[in-house]
Structure formats: structure tokens, C-alpha cells
Length: 317
Image 1 (cartoon, helix red, strand yellow):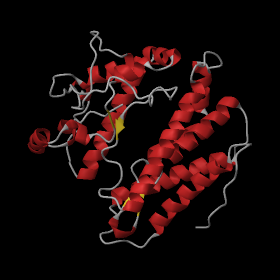
Image 2 (image 1 turned 30 degrees about the vertical axis):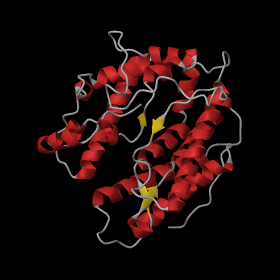
Image 3 (image 1 turned 180 degrees about the vertical axis):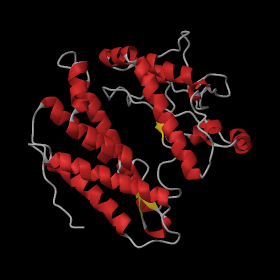
């Protein structure tokens, strides 16, 4: 879901007025959908819509916790020292007067608590595309129109544009294949208890913790540029195969799971072992890379003790 452009929660009062006057909300979004969520929801499998309906309260709670965490990270990165005033963040409003809470609830159930739809134009300022893309009827599953306004690191070279398109293409194809897998499926779905059992498994929780630890971290490149430490497609691959393995009880896990985690560990180790730069890495950022290394080492240790897992090679330190 689009994260509201709540500049008032990220900037001190003097800067918020300037930001809200000159910045469009859609330009503050890492990813922005031109397709209203009520339209997207109408295309979902009935079981998915049922899940959203039954878990609305917990979804709102998790979203709120995640948003507050992200706001805190932004403030820390920007060097903004403000008290935590995000407890009522969902009661903030867009310029149209719609609260973030109603925007979120409309995304989950299709309409607000009062039965009103919330479009993208009246919330984040993007023209609504109320028909999803089927490529002239040639695609079984309709596609939403998504804009990635902050993809990449500023201006890209031709090679970087090619790499970015490849990354987006692979991620989109993966998502589409994943959706096709469940299209028209009416039986054989795991129960809530079975799904919870998978989510509680030690390797699943270790990999999930790794995702949180590496989120937002980058690999420095020449010319002051950088790339994400963990690409979206790699994260999707790990999540799918680790989850599938414990859901289906089949094995072994693909060796690429261990290889990907091992490569991430090596990359973080190299970053931490590099000579101090000018300026040196801030202590708080170094602590994040150290926490990521700890999470990766834990995930690899759990994987090594998983009967059908693949043990990665060890690195002497």
C-alpha cells in the first residue's frame, strides 16, 4: 500500500510548512499506485478478500507499527531530533481531509467505515485509473499501474537503466507467476493455523529478522553511488522458497538460499572490514551493519541445523 506522505511527522514545524506547500504527496512515495485500492481489491481471490476482512484490526496495527518505525528511521537519517509524536499518525489527514486511517481501511475492505471509496487522486494526488491492464484481454490476471518514483540513485547511466529495467522486469514476472499459481484455486489452501506454524518456524523467523536488519542498507559503489544490499527479487526468492519448503514439507531447500545468505554475510563483512572512509561511517550506521551481520550469521546457523538445508562455506575472521 502507498505510504502516506506525512511530512508533518518527519519534519520539524518550520520545515513541514515549506515541504507541504511545494511538494506533491505522490512525489514523496517510494511506490505509488494509479489504480485505486478498491479496484485492486475487487480482482482479488475471494479467500484473499475474506482474509483481509477477518484480519482488518491486526493489519491496521501492523501497518501503524511499521509506519511509525519508518518515520523514526527517516528522522534519524535526516538528523531530526524530535520526540515521538506518531502515536496518532493515522489520524493525520491529506489536504482533502481524508484521514490516513480511512485511506488504509478503504484499501483493506474496499470502502471506509462509512461506506465511501477513497481514490488515489483525492488522497495522494494521482489520476485514478479505474480499469486494470489486461493487455487487450491477453493476460488472465489484470495488472495495476504502479509508479516507482524513487527507484535507483538519482540520474542513471545507460547500463544502470538497463539493469534497473531488468530488475523490475524480473520482480514483476516473479509476482505475476506467483499470482498465477493461486488463480482459480478453491481448495488446498493452508489453514490459518498451518500458516501460523510456518511463520513461527525458526528458519522463517530468522530470515524475516534478516530482512528487517538489512532493510535500507546499501553496498557502496564507485563514484559515490550505491545499490541495495538485498535486491527486491532476491528477498522475494528467499521468502518464497523458505516459506514453501516448510509449508509443503518437501526438500531440500534450493542451494541458492544458502548461497544468497552467505553472499550477503560476506558483503556486510567486507563493508565492516573496509578501511575508514572520508568521512568515516557514522557509528549509528555502523551499528546497523553490525546488526545485519549478526542477523545473517544467526540465519545461516539455523539453516545449517535444518535437516534438509544446505550448509554454506565458512569464512575465517
